[in-house]
Length: 184
Image (cartoon, rainbow, N blue to C red):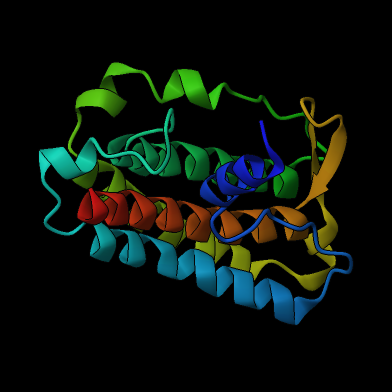
């Protein structure tokens, strides 16, 4: 594959760029990520308002998930993140259980349930998650969980950064899919 083709694929996989691990735990950055996490469900709902079955079947690149799968993935992923955060806060460096997001994206609920179910779930979940994150004492931002697939500890600070990015990343995927429909 040519370098130009690789760059195109990279830009479709990561339309807002790859996530970059923060170097230093700064409270102001953390507060900004909490705000992005807070806004995500409403942004997702706005973007997905009035989508048709045809729209939900669109993909943002060849071989990617459909819009429907992306929406349900966000609910699955953010539920796992919230639980991981709570475990990191209530236990001493717990080992989390990874999951195969591609297998989860093929389950019957993802393929058949209305996306409004996952959007409603995200709204409720993010309300709890944001409340939890806002209440964290600053010294607890470095509490962590062990991720066996990554073979390292991940702090609450780092994970909040990742999930703020994650929401924007998938909003951009949906926007790409809808834009592809308009240019087809």
